[in-house]
Length: 327
Image (tube, rainbow, N blue to C red; front, side):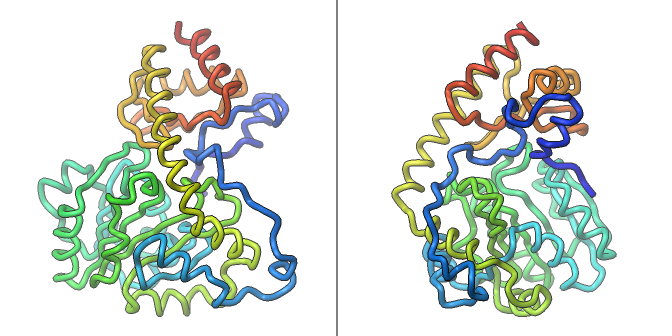
């Protein structure tokens, strides 16, 4: 199983520091998550079913008619490769490694390509997997560029699979509203922007030719009743969404400035994280962990991803730690 950010309990055990002392910057989740209210007790007692408003709220939020709620986009990442016979798959790198692992595990031939290679020449493949914006590199694509690739993949009878986990702060860059086009599959999640990773709710936006077999593969009740209730309310809360986009952009700029002050200029970033490529990434990761601050370390290329602190105390802790480590 691949390692990801958020393994806070493992870090606490390794460092011998109690869990409540930690500042977790490893996940790229919104630290100001949507405020979950008390729920109707019936959502705990009844089997979940459609018609509760979730699909309608998602269609309004994403601007897409054809969609399927799933238990987090990770479920779709693992299931979609099983819907195609063995084929050639091109995946942007560096990127979220679960895509590569899922396609390889399903018997497909996987080729990892940089964004520069993809833009130079679209590879001979039946499936093209992009993370937009990139994770951790925050690479961005124009809508026109993506639609041109979608058209070329569709002409081959192939798929363009877009993982848009970090795109909610810039919805105009999303291809969600185009997800009815042949071979275009868009993955969305409530984990990052809404800060609701624990409820495991995501969506697959795609044509019926993809959604119908995927629904059959996943089976009934893939999302719990309480998770459906929370997701519906969060997707409907436009005032919170608009305010949070402004707040996160400001805090991301603040994080970029703070890292620069400590001689760690970000290589790239988006509203929810900043990415720093440096040969000293292992040493920095370890030194911060010794101070109960968890970052996301990447080996290739050597780099660290910093998420946003939740409050002023967290900002001060990060500033003080970097002053000690990298004066």
